[in-house]
Length: 610
Ligand code: AGP
Figure 1 (cartoon, helix red, strand yellow):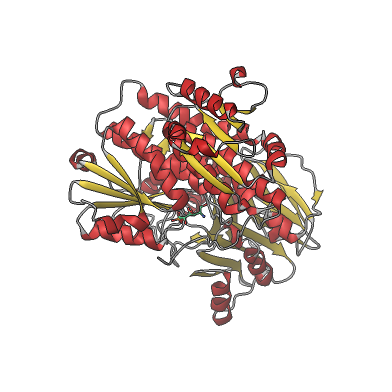
Figure 2: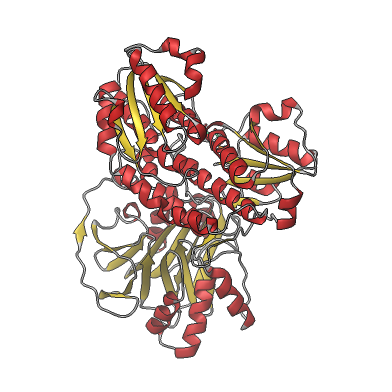
């Protein structure tokens, strides 16, 4: 997720573009840049690693002026943060800023390189501007060249172009990534999100997929990429800037819970070729021969990422038949793990900076294990230390409580397991298609859960004054019970414990009474009837049951049990779907109790101390 801004007007636009980027920093902040057309219609560009403040410092030393320009604040997806990978990217008379993921950038890059184009960055974005130059050479009509370029892109994009040959025209387009058009007094603006332009105008047009907008100082036209004029509605925004950053949600955590379908789509897109039903890991560096040489695997992390690893164990062992050990990073190096050249150590981390996890990875490197990382931040410490990396594409996660990072970690671990199983020859005929189809449907399953938010808020209202909760699950939903308890603890400050449901009779059942709400996760399959028995055990002792049931409600649970139907999916992906209602439950409990949801007491987003 990145932030882009465009400007065309009668005044100099540099300050407006920089201020707009600053207001989009929550969308990404590892590098930034700006390009304008100066009075001679020449592109003047300044880029840097770091936040907008770094760009301002660089602009103070190398000032640029222009009445038409584009800007970008980056959240790296392809290529670590660097000046060369920062946007804008330029080629010939063109410059572009881009938010999104171009799935077929590798094919396009290969084709253009064969034609003599020299690429200076590792980004997918650079292929857009190189392709535009190539198309323009063939037809020399700007708009037709842009249309031809966009038609060849697969994936998501929000783009704004500059062209030295057309100094009075600003062109923007979008597909799946957000882009709005702002209408000011004698000026027009493009932006990824409303906060970027609220200080200039409240009159906007929300652009739609495959819209292509041509803006001049005296007006604009919206058409589709294939040239059909599209009617539009100008809206007036009444949000304040803070509300606008949260896109109208009350907290970043709530916004990020609702971003999960998009985050999962972006994570899938970076690996899965749905047409060919193939997986491609650009940076993981795991060959099929390495797969065959590994005798044991370790999954190591902290907190929520550790819970993802617990689910990963089920995926890896059941699909790939490779023994997996899961460890807390804070314990791992002290237990003298048996690591060698036949073991693979995979660390999992949202931030890529957690000190305990970095220490665990160092332990693996020192002992000669094959070391890989699943991280959400491109170029983070763990990404640089590991010998290969698999990125989640959750975008910046502002809320301290991890939500979209967690579900994309689960998806990444599933993709890794599926790749491993295929490389090890463990998949049955047709099994890859089954899994690819389940992945295709996954974002929609999460949308279904999100549509039930109000039901969960009503549950939270009933139980907001309780001080203890139990979360019970079996199989791959046992780690989800642990995660649901952690979410409840860390944002609503309620004491909550997750347990394997079969463990209740070995002690915790002594806790059950009519003051103890018990959340149960009921997955279809071999363990379903056992979970129903666990529910009866709890009810028999007066416990209040909140049941998340895969498929339809089960009336055998009894009228007194609250039931939330969870959309059914494959056994290995059901943890992803079950995680979401528990996030919502914890969120609404916390919101109703008035805690600081996005920045809970005593917590930090990234624990960089041991
Ligand atoms: C998650 O809700 C917590 N904030 C915390 O447990 C977190 O998962 C843990 O600190 C690990 O962070 P990392 O994923 O950035 O390594």
